[in-house]
Length: 625
Image 1 (tube, helix red, strand yellow):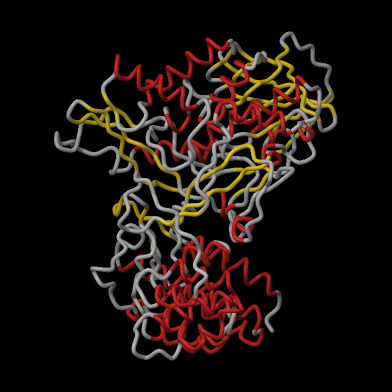
Image 2: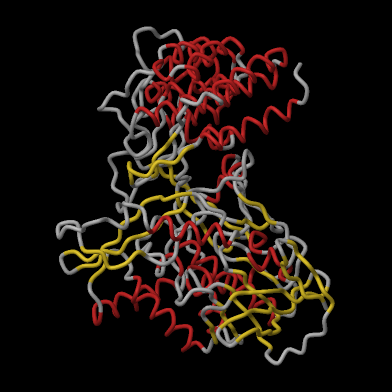
């Protein structure tokens, strides 16, 4: 047997013969959103369970993090019982709080875990993983009682950062492909106002949560932001109770599983027939540097402004099993997804279901004495249906800007009738029609091309060009160039939030189409911020673009990425384009800052990030053409 540990950032395996004094069926690492539910479910199924948690309480983001509301996700599962008991405890003993009472839920989770028969330890940090080949056999950790070890038949890694999986040498990935960046984190302030508990948050920065020093620094610095630690709190604002001790981390390490669910799967309607649970939300990316995201995400969120489209994704068994390992499961937001879809499949309801499903998988693997990859699905499905964990959400549904988040929504299907698509393209909410046209592809191209010449309608030719651009038809180029030359500031009303300006959406499409004819226009944009008019105040997307500086960042970043894509194909332009971009990036007067969601005060410089992405792209070209 080997002990796998991390020393000075490197994994080191040493041969050992551990004498496990304690043996468990299941050890769960991380008793947060997924892990606490996994511990309760596994113990109620009769397994001998140990839970390890590095913090001082259970529940993770929903308790210690103060994220008390539910943002979509699907109903059903044992978390519903926990929430019911939490509401009862709040009514009897606590001040009323918005959403699920954080303090009450932490207590209920402890009570449920203990009454189910599971043991648990707080302030416990995993040091190493015991392995036989690729099979995980136990853990070594340090806690209040010193260094301890225990053996197990299955370990559930619900650490949110796939820490056990990483220690076991499993393949993990992090962030988007362009630069490895994950979404920004939030932190929450708890306030007392009118005898009620209120929570307020802002997005506060970026951090690699797997780096302990960086994480500690971010916890301290974000707590000291003026949005949180104010010089004075007025009664009408609420009195500060505390800054919640756990950061709201949206994304970190993701395992490479036996199966991976991607945004491409959703687009192409490739779904598993053997789901563990159904995730349900929109592509809730909080980052503002969308120009550096994948083309699939930009097609969706920038060209079509479909940030607010909700959809359901069935999550298969293999997303919870690290590839090539045995005796190890992941649960929570580190399951096997791509970066794009990780912004959808991370909601608390769904992550609680992930923990419950992992417990069911462990139970069947142990009681059937079978590999995690060969669990009989019929029996697993029966367990999942027993508690409602497998309850299905809606398939695809669109919530427009006038719809409140807590309402019951009507499901809207993709459009197939050309007349309906034309009508929507001619309006101010074209997103569904643009994507519907992309889905229809070549069969709709003749109609789209004919609509380009519709001079009597403002939006129809422009939105038809955007649809053609997504399809890859060069007939879109003249109209897309016109949109850029006009510095078109129209903001569609498609989505409830995060609609994108038509002008830089056209820039993205021209880069996608590798149009060399737009190069000089894009160079004008990156060289002169004064090239841009102001947004119409009535169209202003305050949450995404809060001031002219942010507007310039969007046009600048999309122009830079379009220029690089164009030069990928037109090699004769590489030297001049590369030199022009580098010259502008080295201009000491260049400022590229964005605000974070929830605050116009916190500003973050994007200059270094753009420089890194550009340098990486230029290096991929090798010697100048």
